[in-house]
Image (cartoon, rainbow, N blue to C red; front, top):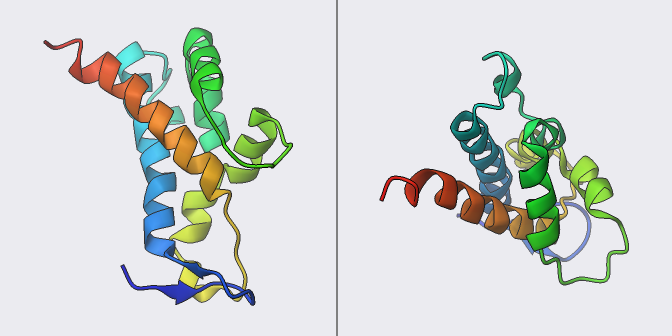
Length: 129
């Protein structure tokens, strides 16, 4: 990935990598929805909002994800607040190079992606064995 400065600070970010983490969260949730048949009509699963996709998941999986996520930073925001603030990260970051400033809660999204990966793997891959 090409390193790029995003914003006025001195932090070097990798927008393509961050965009892919947000996109992975979206795809893992869609895979879980298809596996659990909780997606309703086919148009609802076309949504890109991480927040709306999360709330389409079965309530037991929502609770499990909230329970298993480990976010090791000093941000006092709740899971729901951080998810809401990250809901459109993929859509924003796929064109990161077109913005002067841009922010993403990469610590939250990385932890969220790890839990979603475990849940999706358990439901899809491990159930086939």
